Image (cartoon, rainbow, N blue to C red; front, side):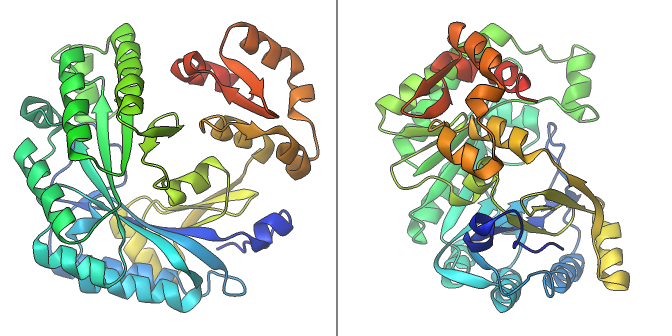
Length: 385
């Protein structure tokens, strides 16, 4: 595992994040391409928790400071509070954990009880990322989500009752057969519930998933790109009118409730990753763990090493298209200080062309996407790769 003391004093002194991948799910969603595994027994989960706890020690240099911890999956809320506590205690033993650390746990509807939520809160979990996806029961069946709209409403109420005052909703637009009115109803329902944060994504189709096969065989209608663009515009209008601020292409929050952990990825900050398929980044290289759960556990038990690959990235290039995802854009002076080159000079003609097309703008020393640029962000990013 890497040392954060790389690249510059900036990386040596800035807090890092910790990501912990929990792969277990009750069932597999039709669109999912993540590293997941069906929950089979508490013994199997205990064995996996042991493996993660074995991976953490010795992976830091000088008790590195962290200020975000993120349990992703999969469905981390299938873990018992004492299992989560074991992992957190291991993290705290090997890292200098900030007093105001943001500890996020992904949770799916109908996977928690008042008792487990109280347990999570008591050990420091202070943010819930809530996988709603849609409030339409027909669409939930299409996604094979394993819950219905009432489960989502009830689980949200349980989160509030347990004292969670920082809750994020995940919603998906562009589902097969989804209408603009249906998407508006999802937004209306979410706004009425008033979570602190919303992540709203356009459905991505991954080869090898059941949904990809359904679309290929025309059992489900293909995505209408014009409709998807209209959904994005409606999303912007409704959320901004409801008092949410957009701080990233797909992410909205009440002031002060931005996802501190996810922002590390967009700003190319260091992150330690643990668990099956987890990725780490040290400012220069990405490190990837074994993607198969059983093999990950076996590797940790036999060799105490889960890493299977590492890649040195073009950080100057990635910083651009990740930074452009943020509505604040890229501070051109800070970019020059970090990478020793002037972005606006290196890409002068490309920026000029995208600016003329209404996709980019430079304002107050920052390069940023326009509202139109957000609709065509992939095309903009491609000019910097």
